[in-house]
Length: 287
Ligand SMILES: [Zn+2]
Ligand SMILES: [Zn+2]
Ligand SMILES: [Zn+2]
Image 1 (cartoon, rainbow, N blue to C red):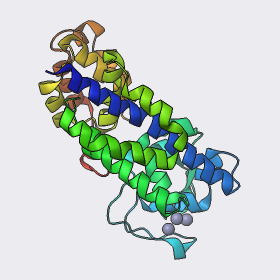
Image 2 (cartoon, protein in one colour; image 1 turned 45 degrees about the horizontal axis):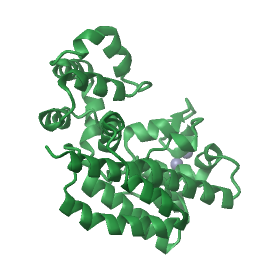
Image 3 (tube, rainbow, N blue to C red; image 1 turned 30 degrees about the horizontal axis):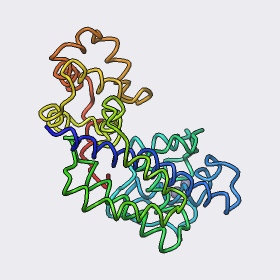
Image 4 (cartoon, rainbow, N blue to C red; image 1 turned 90 degrees about the horizontal axis):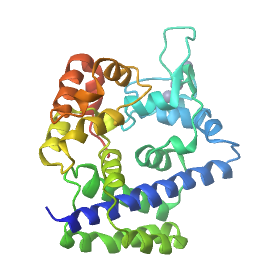
């Protein structure tokens, strides 16, 4: 196991967590400010944004208003947990299913992870052709090198093939990021932060995908005694399945800290997660 491979993963992961994600949020903010919205909440609560995101979650649905803008998306890139993070259904009148029944939740720009931020940027914002291409490229690079990189390693050869592009994408979006890029490139491996980024970038907390967890367990370098705890802490806190509450009610920390901690957790999830919750993880789209 090459520590330098891990460090290179950490550098690229840091770039996405500490530069790309905030840049995407900033772009969303610029867009809604230009359109005259006073807050992110006002923006996603607007009819037009709500309508677009609604059809990216709901297939074969015809609305009661603004029908000219209804569309049917082949893929449904907005997943259940993203939709629930953004909107709440009102117990409105009538049996119809339409965006008019939803209200935006009180969420902040900082609540957006890179996946959701890019989804909103590409679908609801006026980016201009160049920025749109770059956001798409960065999305693709995250997908290619991080989203399924359960090893948390990047070889020197691969690193050389991706770094120049990555640098150029980011500097085209924001030329002031050069110093940050240099700083991150020279950064020593911080194992704890790297483990945290690995979880975020794999989107394990959203997928709750047992197969992927098992695969991760096979190859991770993370100490067995920490694996269960790391994944347990990455489970959603306010998810409808109440998975995290149940988990801390029913599994002791001592059990999680054993060598078998992760197996205990996976067995638990298998028993307590409804199949609907797991179905989400099968909709593998984008990141
Ligand atoms: Zn309606
Ligand atoms: Zn519609
Ligand atoms: Zn509607």
